Image 1: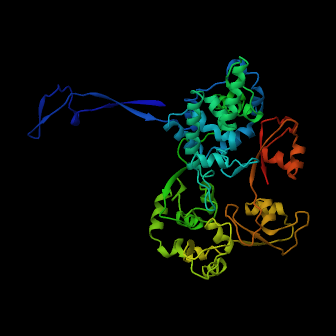
Image 2 (image 1 turned 120 degrees about the vertical axis):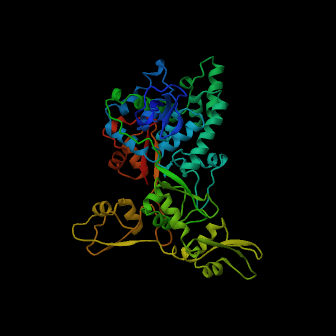
Image 3 (image 1 turned 90 degrees about the vertical axis):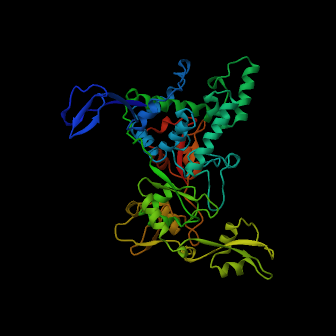
Length: 492
């Protein structure tokens, strides 16, 4: 941190000078004891304005000299690649300040706060081909092991606060397991501690060194740590890469606000005076239209809106909030009858209660929704766009700020068939979770690690998408320059 030293000079009032310590002077017939002028040094701590400068001051992990040549391929990806560097900076705007602050508070290397750049580009909705989810890419089993709750309402792997706590705890545990070696710890985070230990034992048997750089690890893991360290090199000295690292303000992007119980996310947006997209972007852990009735009972809101939100929330009538009853099953009841009584679909009632069968038993209890807040959720929010002459899927998607894939899924369109004038197109918020009449397919982000022998065309064929889309999504100018271990973002 920078230190700013300011000198505060206490001056004698009314033009008095040369007054000795404890000298008594007369002023309006009153005796006043004065103190001789003193210089008081006050230390005011000033943090850097730019978060990159804050990180730059604390980076400690480096690539050893004998590995500089071996890691050159990762430097080449960023060298003179301004578009990739712009994307890095943009992806860190919302959550980097939080991961950095938590790492510092826990006394961990700041490099750990940068891992989501490598894992997911800080995309909380990212999901790998293996099922890893969120900015920290937790696998379901590992997430559960580290306390990340997952149910129909909520996925802690996508919750930025919860997943960051779990990831940093996991990394701390791994660091203890690998005797304080952070490179081995990060490798184990990526591929699992068992795999790293196996590689260490193998090297020991062969009298080989056991540094990260000397181990026989999966290609993705072999690339994982160098990519992070090269990113650190870029942050330290962007000029060496002949790029400009766009500034990110060194201040929180969001604040955590407590809520009294389950809350409709669209309602929360209204209370905070925000677009629904903003609520969904900052609260990706909630899978449905409302927060989880069993918690966590908080929302992340942009800095500066919490007072308005809290005031508006406190003024709400309780009947306008989402409420629940415990319904005691009676003899003769069935799920269809209960669902009809509470105006909810049987499938939704089963999901809410974690039921995988229609069988119910008299005397048992299930959770059922009640109140106007739930009733308003029975129809998905939509607006209708009427196709005009000259319209295309591309122009409509751009105008409505959604993707072509969204429009196709929402309307079950054949992308090869031209649109008709006066055709009705359903448009939803791209962040709102749509149920009921909307197709069950969902557009999702998939992270695909490039394997040996892969080409853009081969990957495109495998996922039945166009090579041009893969290039566009990943800002690839030269298709020949993809390499094993590189992670591509696909939208499926």
